[in-house]
Length: 424
Figure (cartoon, rainbow, N blue to C red):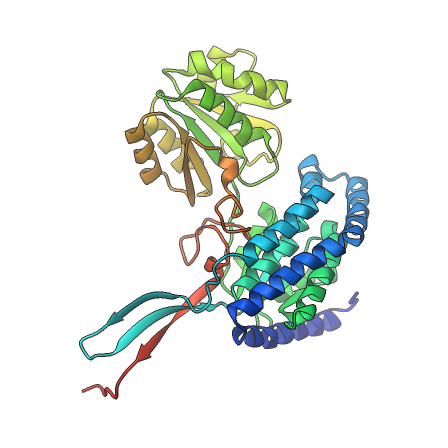
């Protein structure tokens, strides 16, 4: 572990240089080479499971001593089942189409030049994340699939787990004949390491992806001198329309809130049409309460269910990441869209309705990276989108939006083929 600012700066700069060299080597590899490396990484995760789980147990012990929240503990925990899901995700990514070299478009101009827009890797990607050690594997696999090198910086609470996972993945890369430096993990919890990454490591880091709490993402977005792909908060809504199937509404709302309350795709606010609220809201609320969810409602909701906690203005702006749900009764679709426009964070929004016209209007007009009809917001996940996994959900409007998978980790160049043309 580095102890001085100078030595840490030198360490980070060296990591950047080695990552740049590895990214150049990767750019010369074939899709088959990268697939072979990914399968070797998945094998290495399985053979190293015992050591990884031991390291995770140490992280969990320390996290409990620090009294981290239940949501944070859930994100941090690894089990044999989650380890299996991790290696399965890497294998799924290995089977995805390789985006590097794909021709996005091709055309010929009047001069006779043949022009193609072709996908290329971004180069070196820095991923800064908290809690979830599985991000180490997901991010590394997606970067390799897209021909990029990765510099990972895990949170201090998951550092032991992340180091064990990264060690296994690097061994898999080496065994497959690929550069181990295509995956590097910062082995120190020092916060200054993040600052060095945000400078761009003397031009060796091409883009930064933050994956964590609001404080981390705000810092990265404010201080980074390189492009950032990420989202600040996942304040997700579900609107229950007047034409909703009541049972679908119950099932979807429960899953969206309670499947995993600590994920960014968890529903935080339920919007319900006033025409069906007297009949449907108590039915939706019952299983949520039984599962231990605290319900907070606006004045209209409290008129229907007097024992609801009164929702405040702050509730509409809060990403709980906990078994807490705010409820608002709205007049119609316009009221739901207006509420989402005011309080939403552009992450994931859903409507429950059997009216196709209403659903299409919601899907077209809602401002979100992901818009769903008759489905839980917890599907906001790259694996569920057929991407194998994702580094995060991007809510910006430039380059990538929604789940960031292998394809979103590429840029493009124009390849122009001529027959001797000169410009008059």
